Length: 520
Ligand code: HXC
Image (cartoon, rainbow, N blue to C red; front, top):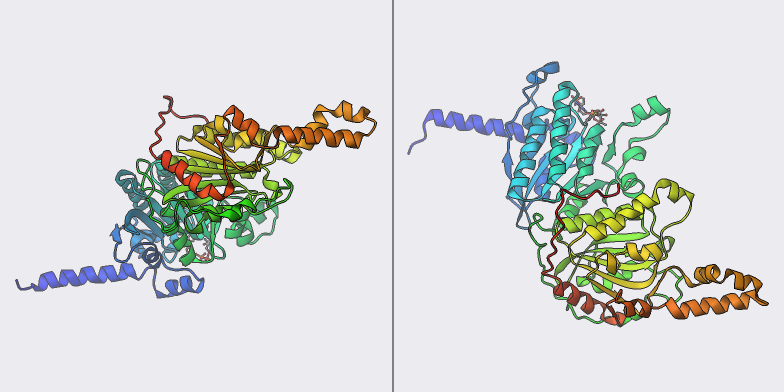
């Protein structure tokens, strides 16, 4: 059929309108974005999704606000690109704020586009990925912007535990805008180009007379290392986006599914005799628990979460025999692997994520205890440490615990002991499971005897040795059934793969309730 002039004109009009939309906020704004070493919203979406998989929603949406001449401005997409696409063939909903359009600020229409994607993701039960780069609430739109944030926070919270939600901070995130990512499961920040703060340096100076730069106040490093707000630090947009793609490979699309199984050429029964010698027999000598992890996971791969925060505990994703697992390990290399407030928070949040999304837990234990002292007590170590007990007990996914060396006191219990519901507890022959270390124990029980002895030093040494012989091993615990088996370290990978395979169909019914009341 011949094309009519009218149809041609309409098509030309459509193409022209679309071309305008694709130009973002204009060439000068796009250049400025690139000069800051930042990609545009569409470039980011292209990097995130499989080629040609993006289906855009709401490209023609405009603000209906008339305040401050907003109706006279050309704000294509209203500053946020939204749609659906695939990552490694699996569907995700995505939105990317466009800083070239009024600083990516969030007005009513912008917010409603995000809300549409959040609703879509929840109904389709697919992950929702947010790429943020925004000056926060669009000041000209007043209450409409604030209410927009309210709608987004509400959906972030209601979707939590149903679908995975990941936030990439790729520019400024100011004001209340920070709370949407904070409710999502993971935050990835870039080192130089991203910031998160509830009030910027100008307000800080005004109110507190403190001089601070944007980066010092809320840059990527600060939030990865000090506040623990962010989970991953990337060099730039590309690395941040690659991190999000990797991260998704360990998780299912929603809480009803199992994580994807990935076949591996690494045999599940691979022996590793070096594991016999990696842990120093002197319980006070450090080693890097990541060396152990690398020897037991498929291909030695481990995606560490919160790498820079609370390094005395290590958490992250790996696969064993093709199955995703979440690993929680005390890190003897930092503060002897002691559990403090930050370590408890870090591990608890990770464990809860894994439990939400059917990812089994592997806990590697070498822990001297909870951190003593006024700083920790007054900071609420009781409240924070309790989270770990709560989340391990609450978790119904398969839980396998391997005691490598020290497992003392409350921290032994806290690191997924048998009676917090571990399905299988294994121990190395080097394990020491006791109320406390032998020297401390001897000092308490035999204080009077040691003090009154003719040779107190010899008396102390004798009692320490006695306590060691009694408890500095895994056998008393195994006699009680608190440890299910004591294994040769060279067989670790095989034993763990067997344990997870045996538990693959574990199904635990939870007592009826609305929800528990986790100590926060
Ligand atoms: C409207 C905004 C804006 C905003 C930036 N712009 N933020 N427009 N509302 N919140 C506009 C600027 O006017 C400018 O427009 C363009 O975006 C780019 O901004 P620049 O300042 O030129 O960019 P840059 O120097 O890179 O600085 C980025 C910035 C800064 C650090 C984000 O713009 C800034 O401090 N913005 C205000 C941040 C803020 O206070 N937001 C409100 C927070 S309160 P032109 O036309 O000149 O290009 C909040 C409450 C939410 O968000 C509460 C939810 C519960």
